[in-house]
Image (tube, rainbow, N blue to C red; front, side):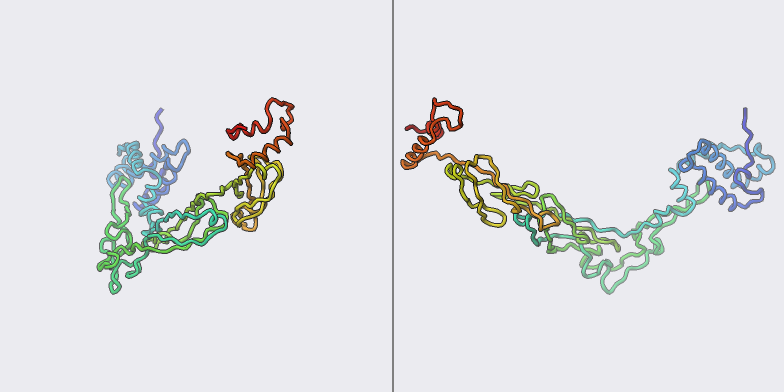
Length: 380
C-alpha cells in the first residue's frame, strides 16, 4: 500500500504564497524539532525527511513552479538523499551553527588563557613537620612582561586592528549547502582571535607579553603535616595570556626521616635500651623526645618489647596544634657480651639467691646462671 504524500506547503505549515524567507524560517524551526539527534520519537526520522524534501522543492524556483502546476508529479525528489546530506553536518550542534552563524560556544570563546599550574617539592625535617615552619624556596615561572605589561608592544607603540578580521577576531565564510547559504565562523588565524596585531613587538619579551623570572616564595608549613600533603598557593603559578588569570602553585611536602623517631599517625615511636639491672629492678631513665630529654620511669621486671607511653609528647594534629599524639617508647633489654670479675661475682651471687628454674617450671637440670653463661658464650 502506497502512502499518499502530503502537500509540501502543509508539511512546512506555510501558505502557497509564502516568501522564500518564510519558507526558510519554517524549515529551520521544523528541522530543529524533528532532527533525530534531538527528537527521539519513532517517527522523527520520517518527519525530518518529509520536511527536508518539502524545503528542497519550495526553495528551488523552477521546482516550485512545476510543483504549483503539476503537484508531486511535476518534481522528482529523493528525500532519502536529502536526509543523508543533512546527516553530514554531524549533529544538532552543526544545525545551530549552519543557520545561526556559529554555535553559542564558538561565539563566546575567548582568546584569554589561564596560566599553567606549577608544582614544587619542599623537603622539611621531622621536627619542622611536627611543629610547623616558614620556608622560603626559589621557583622559575612565566610572568607578565615588565616592559610592555603584557601588551606585547613597545611602550610607545600600540597594536593595530587586524585587517583580516576587521578587529572582530573571527572570520566568517559563506558556504552553500542543500539547505541554502549559511555562515561558518572560525577564529582569525592572523590575530589568533584577539582582533589586533602587534606592529612593533616589545624588545624585552620579543612580543610574547610574558617573560620567565626567578622568584622567592614563602611557604607556611602547618604543624602536623605529613609526606605527600600539598599546599596550594592560589594565583602563584604561571601568568595567563590575553587577560587570562594566573595558575596556582602546588607545594608537595616531603618529610625527611629521623635517626631516632618514627611516625605512626600522630604518635611518635622510638626505642630505649636498658641493662639487665634496670630492667630487673626498675629505673628512671632519660628519653629523647620532640620536646627534648624527658625522664621516663621504667617499672621493675620490664621485658624486651614492652612499650611505655609519654602522653601528649607526640605530633600535633593538623589544624589543631593544641591536640597532640603520644610518644611510645619500646624497651630493649641488653644482655652483656662480657663481664668483669666483679660483675661475674655479683651475677653468681644473684644466681645463688634466685636458685634454679626462675620461671617456676621446677626443672633443676640447668641453673639460671648456667643459661646466662651460655648466652655469653663463656665458662665458669
